[in-house]
Image (tube, rainbow, N blue to C red; front, side, top):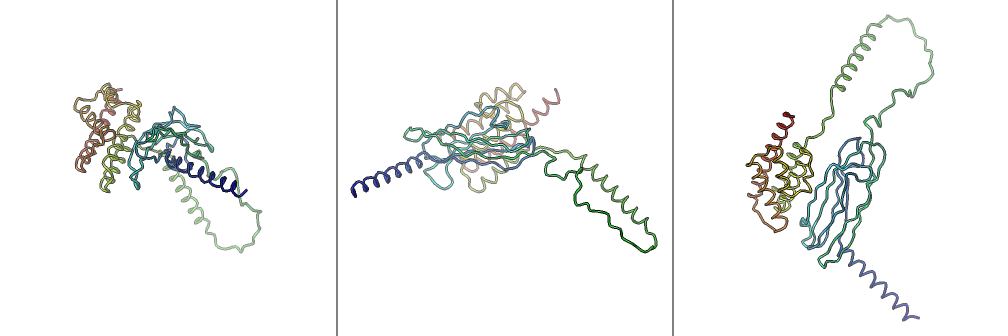
Length: 312
């Protein structure tokens, strides 16, 4: 009887060790949302990433025009980025931009990610779902048709003092004029979303800051490539995040891109691909030059887009 108990205990220990080793080999899948409450038509980001062993290949799921109740505005992938703390791990990240015109509480569904390990064995990983609340612009405001804290009239007797009614009327009139002026200012204001060019400039400034903080050159080039792709997709309205470098350049030629502009973009995409797939290692000076070139490319592309819109 004691022998059988020992055998069962050893089997349970072995199964637990194998399960733990399998989980460690597959890696982990994590996700986050840039917030929990948003307004109608307010874009936000849903980020999914995995931390997997070096040599693994991650396949993110195919994303269509919608994800649950949300419309997909665009997505970017950052692949095989060195882990910040461990040399034996790599980080693969997908960032999805979403929005919705509906109000209520909606669930961002769990995503299944396929990881092919260094031993060529496939392991599926699954993220956790997220609950997102979408509010209208009038939500959480007081209802002007509902009166609260109104009590019965109380008769109070006063002596007959000298009348200062004109002071009260002056204060009331001034308050009314101030409210009308404030209302006019509020109505005159319009909510202004960030343009793709403004977003790209902010991302480039962040890249320059990260470069000063000794961020790896390979990661900087991958993020720089992603910034250009997302900008092109939102400004010129073609799926740049899934295009090759040559396909993007061919698309921009239809918008009137110059030979010089195409040459700069081809050089940027080529360096980004070599850094991603061929472990090209650039110096800090060379990375700074590529970031400055991207800044000029964005300016030229924005001028091209504005000229095309004015001509239309």
